[in-house]
Length: 249
Image 1 (tube, one colour):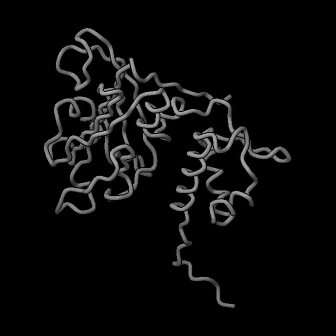
Image 2 (spheres, one colour):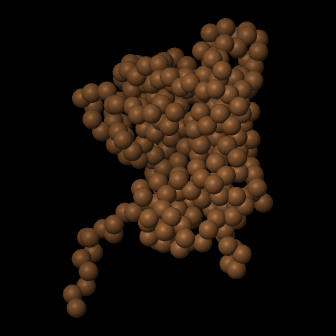
């Protein structure tokens, strides 16, 4: 028998597995699954995918600390799982986080444009990304009961875009994902740096009194080789959101 051609790549089923992972997570957060998950076979029937896809989705959820799998016991949902404990990992949207806290939420993408990197992003990320050339910048505002609670500014250096002939079309601003649709290389992971900031007058769009504190997240979105592909500057009003960090022992 002729050996398989070494140049033939295996089929990549990760996008489907990721969609199933997201669907299982959403069902957990909506309490469609409580305490434990059905077995792999039942999940495969429920989501109309193969057990291999279910296994990959569950592996991702286990790595993220959402579930614990033990032989003879099954798959249990970890007790800490709630939106406030998952927001820093961007496993849930900020809109869902605000809704969980009882707020009426409105999300607005204020603008998407090509421009030079703004001064605040230059100051925060000059050592990570090219700041001298043009960039794709988008602003997103999350309102809670009519009050601006979270302001996000995302920036992608223009050279990182697949199609540099036009502005990318941004999808749902509540679930902004600039990795797959238009970056030349996908983002593998992001690192969020948390900084307490005191408002000195012109530092943020948030309606925070001068002299009052707010939380700023500096996110760097990395490709597989560690290169920073994009950055996000996120200002959060502490009156609406307090992040939680879960540590697994």
